[in-house]
Image (tube, rainbow, N blue to C red):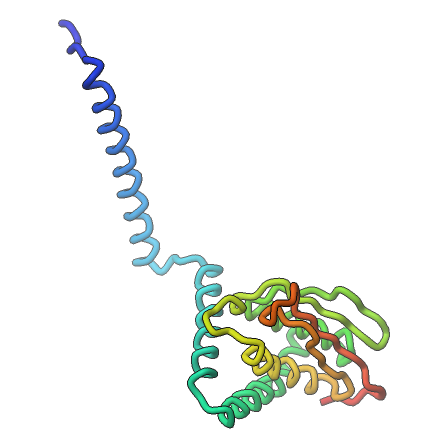
Length: 194
């Protein structure tokens, strides 16, 4: 029995057809896998977290731009209060001291939870400098330095609750075009716990 003769014209067509079938098969497998993951609640935690944190930023940004300036001040006060209210849990969970270094660690942890990559770049007896190099919110539509400053109130409340003698200053903002967000924590003298 002889094998069918394949002409030069039909060979490329067959290869294309078989190649497309393989691609379609791979796409079907991928689609079935994705459907299985979704139906069985197996979406990776990191993907869920990233989407949730990004959504929180988008929601806050939209609310900020919807409300009047007086209500924006209320949002800032609300965030400051949240920072104060989280102090005991943060201190206990991180097992930090209520000093300058402890405040810096609390900020690094809070930043991490909200998708902000940050690190201590300078630490002295009376001052700590923190740089944030990436966040999930900066590139959101209508994101402004004013929105960042309002959100900073959480950090300011957290620091004030840990130690009232530590001052929080944000000197650079990525949302303003700076290469990093720069926060400086300074000791204002005698330690005073929140």
